Image (cartoon, rainbow, N blue to C red; front, side, top):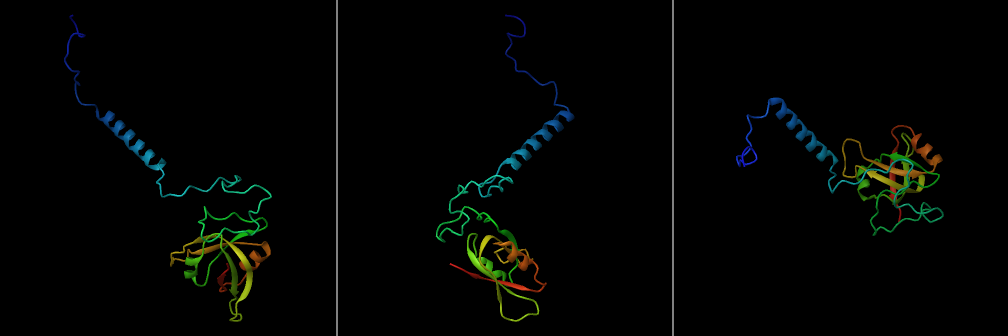
Length: 175
Protein backbone atom coordinates (compact mmCIF):
# COMPACT_ATOMS: atom_id res chain seq x y z
CA UNK A 1 0.00 0.00 0.00
CA UNK A 2 1.57 3.12 -1.12
CA UNK A 3 0.31 6.63 -1.08
CA UNK A 4 -1.56 8.69 1.46
CA UNK A 5 -4.07 6.05 2.52
CA UNK A 6 -1.33 3.89 4.00
CA UNK A 7 0.13 6.53 6.29
CA UNK A 8 -0.87 6.78 9.91
CA UNK A 9 0.44 10.29 10.40
CA UNK A 10 -2.08 12.68 12.02
CA UNK A 11 -3.52 15.52 10.03
CA UNK A 12 -1.76 18.70 10.96
CA UNK A 13 -2.85 22.27 10.61
CA UNK A 14 -0.61 24.25 8.40
CA UNK A 15 -1.04 27.18 10.76
CA UNK A 16 -3.47 28.72 13.19
CA UNK A 17 -6.89 29.75 11.92
CA UNK A 18 -7.01 33.27 10.57
CA UNK A 19 -8.13 36.14 12.75
CA UNK A 20 -11.41 36.55 10.81
CA UNK A 21 -12.26 32.90 11.39
CA UNK A 22 -11.62 33.20 15.14
CA UNK A 23 -13.79 36.33 15.34
CA UNK A 24 -16.65 34.59 13.49
CA UNK A 25 -16.48 31.48 15.66
CA UNK A 26 -16.37 33.60 18.84
CA UNK A 27 -19.31 35.74 17.67
CA UNK A 28 -21.39 32.65 16.84
CA UNK A 29 -20.60 31.11 20.24
CA UNK A 30 -21.59 34.32 22.06
CA UNK A 31 -24.84 34.65 20.11
CA UNK A 32 -25.78 31.02 20.71
CA UNK A 33 -25.07 31.42 24.43
CA UNK A 34 -27.15 34.60 24.58
CA UNK A 35 -30.04 32.94 22.73
CA UNK A 36 -29.94 29.99 25.11
CA UNK A 37 -29.94 32.32 28.13
CA UNK A 38 -32.87 34.36 26.80
CA UNK A 39 -34.97 31.36 25.77
CA UNK A 40 -34.44 29.44 28.99
CA UNK A 41 -37.16 30.23 31.52
CA UNK A 42 -36.08 29.82 35.16
CA UNK A 43 -38.27 27.52 37.24
CA UNK A 44 -39.27 30.39 39.58
CA UNK A 45 -40.69 32.62 36.81
CA UNK A 46 -44.45 32.56 36.42
CA UNK A 47 -45.81 32.02 32.91
CA UNK A 48 -46.71 35.11 30.92
CA UNK A 49 -50.29 36.32 30.54
CA UNK A 50 -52.47 34.51 28.01
CA UNK A 51 -52.89 36.17 24.62
CA UNK A 52 -55.88 38.53 24.34
CA UNK A 53 -59.08 36.81 23.34
CA UNK A 54 -58.09 33.37 24.61
CA UNK A 55 -59.91 31.76 27.50
CA UNK A 56 -57.89 31.19 30.67
CA UNK A 57 -56.98 27.57 31.31
CA UNK A 58 -58.94 27.48 34.57
CA UNK A 59 -62.10 29.09 33.21
CA UNK A 60 -65.38 27.40 33.80
CA UNK A 61 -67.79 26.51 31.02
CA UNK A 62 -70.69 28.88 30.32
CA UNK A 63 -73.59 28.51 32.70
CA UNK A 64 -71.44 27.45 35.66
CA UNK A 65 -71.05 29.34 38.93
CA UNK A 66 -67.83 31.10 37.85
CA UNK A 67 -68.10 34.88 38.03
CA UNK A 68 -71.27 34.80 40.14
CA UNK A 69 -69.62 35.96 43.32
CA UNK A 70 -68.72 32.48 44.58
CA UNK A 71 -65.13 32.55 45.77
CA UNK A 72 -62.76 29.79 46.78
CA UNK A 73 -62.09 29.29 50.47
CA UNK A 74 -59.10 31.03 51.99
CA UNK A 75 -57.39 27.68 52.66
CA UNK A 76 -57.16 26.75 48.96
CA UNK A 77 -54.40 28.65 47.12
CA UNK A 78 -55.56 30.43 43.99
CA UNK A 79 -53.99 29.63 40.61
CA UNK A 80 -53.89 33.33 39.74
CA UNK A 81 -56.00 36.44 39.75
CA UNK A 82 -59.70 35.76 39.37
CA UNK A 83 -61.30 36.66 36.04
CA UNK A 84 -63.11 39.96 35.71
CA UNK A 85 -66.82 39.30 36.35
CA UNK A 86 -69.28 40.16 33.58
CA UNK A 87 -70.45 43.76 33.78
CA UNK A 88 -67.48 44.88 35.89
CA UNK A 89 -64.43 46.99 35.16
CA UNK A 90 -61.01 46.82 36.80
CA UNK A 91 -59.99 49.91 38.77
CA UNK A 92 -56.64 50.59 40.46
CA UNK A 93 -57.04 52.06 43.96
CA UNK A 94 -54.24 53.57 46.04
CA UNK A 95 -55.00 53.07 49.70
CA UNK A 96 -54.32 55.74 52.32
CA UNK A 97 -52.58 53.01 54.34
CA UNK A 98 -50.57 50.78 51.93
CA UNK A 99 -49.72 48.39 54.78
CA UNK A 100 -53.29 47.06 54.47
CA UNK A 101 -52.28 45.47 51.15
CA UNK A 102 -50.24 42.88 53.05
CA UNK A 103 -53.39 41.09 54.23
CA UNK A 104 -55.23 41.15 50.90
CA UNK A 105 -55.15 38.41 48.26
CA UNK A 106 -56.74 38.10 44.81
CA UNK A 107 -60.24 36.69 45.13
CA UNK A 108 -60.97 38.38 48.48
CA UNK A 109 -64.02 40.59 48.95
CA UNK A 110 -63.65 44.06 50.46
CA UNK A 111 -65.80 47.10 51.18
CA UNK A 112 -64.24 50.20 49.59
CA UNK A 113 -64.52 53.28 51.76
CA UNK A 114 -63.61 56.86 50.84
CA UNK A 115 -62.98 60.04 52.79
CA UNK A 116 -63.31 62.89 50.27
CA UNK A 117 -60.75 65.68 50.36
CA UNK A 118 -61.97 68.51 52.58
CA UNK A 119 -65.10 66.54 53.42
CA UNK A 120 -66.38 65.03 56.59
CA UNK A 121 -64.02 62.85 58.62
CA UNK A 122 -66.53 59.98 58.42
CA UNK A 123 -65.84 57.50 55.63
CA UNK A 124 -68.48 56.81 52.99
CA UNK A 125 -69.13 53.33 51.63
CA UNK A 126 -68.32 53.58 47.93
CA UNK A 127 -68.39 49.93 46.84
CA UNK A 128 -69.64 47.05 48.99
CA UNK A 129 -68.22 43.53 48.42
CA UNK A 130 -65.76 44.55 45.69
CA UNK A 131 -63.70 41.66 44.27
CA UNK A 132 -59.92 41.98 44.63
CA UNK A 133 -58.35 41.21 41.25
CA UNK A 134 -54.71 41.84 42.15
CA UNK A 135 -52.49 43.36 44.82
CA UNK A 136 -49.36 45.19 43.64
CA UNK A 137 -46.57 46.33 45.95
CA UNK A 138 -47.81 44.61 49.10
CA UNK A 139 -44.25 44.64 50.45
CA UNK A 140 -44.62 48.28 51.50
CA UNK A 141 -43.19 50.00 48.43
CA UNK A 142 -42.33 53.58 49.32
CA UNK A 143 -42.26 54.85 45.73
CA UNK A 144 -46.06 54.95 45.44
CA UNK A 145 -46.24 51.91 43.17
CA UNK A 146 -48.52 49.95 45.48
CA UNK A 147 -52.11 49.56 44.36
CA UNK A 148 -55.16 47.41 44.80
CA UNK A 149 -57.02 46.36 41.65
CA UNK A 150 -60.73 45.93 42.24
CA UNK A 151 -63.59 44.73 40.04
CA UNK A 152 -66.33 47.36 40.29
CA UNK A 153 -69.58 48.01 38.45
CA UNK A 154 -69.11 50.88 35.96
CA UNK A 155 -71.10 53.44 37.99
CA UNK A 156 -69.05 52.76 41.15
CA UNK A 157 -65.84 52.87 39.10
CA UNK A 158 -66.81 56.30 37.72
CA UNK A 159 -67.45 57.59 41.24
CA UNK A 160 -64.10 56.21 42.49
CA UNK A 161 -62.13 57.69 39.61
CA UNK A 162 -64.04 61.01 39.66
CA UNK A 163 -63.32 61.84 43.30
CA UNK A 164 -61.27 65.01 43.89
CA UNK A 165 -57.54 64.70 44.41
CA UNK A 166 -56.66 64.25 48.04
CA UNK A 167 -59.48 61.78 48.67
CA UNK A 168 -58.35 58.84 50.74
CA UNK A 169 -59.39 55.24 50.22
CA UNK A 170 -59.59 52.45 52.79
CA UNK A 171 -60.87 48.88 52.69
CA UNK A 172 -62.66 46.61 55.11
CA UNK A 173 -61.94 42.92 54.48
CA UNK A 174 -65.07 40.77 54.15
CA UNK A 175 -65.35 37.06 54.80
